[in-house]
Length: 145
Image 1 (cartoon, rainbow, N blue to C red):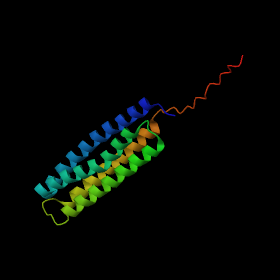
Image 2 (cartoon, one colour):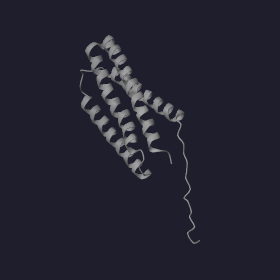
Image 3 (cartoon, rainbow, N blue to C red):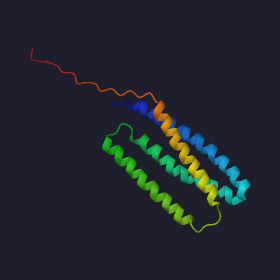
Image 4 (cartoon, one colour):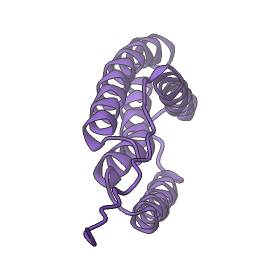
């Protein structure tokens, strides 16, 4: 079993990297959005950032919260967070469907960029992590002597 402290450190690293990269992408998206579509472009970048935070953040934070728990609990936490974030994203999209105060292309660009960057960060962090997986056999003591 992998040490809980090692997994916690890995998740902390992932969340920190995702936060930094997401902030940079959102800032770039906001600048591009303002240049391309003025105020609606800025709103598109802000909404894309909120939706990306829901998508990327809930996955990382739910996994972080599941560190050290039984596999069934981990599955329950991950599946539950996935359902919640899908419901939230669909609700946000339904509310924004008729709105015209934001640029849809900037929102989509920021959202897709942050989500893809999050996937790359997750994969890189897990692939380069030094996780030891050791099964310690139970000690057998003979007390019949």
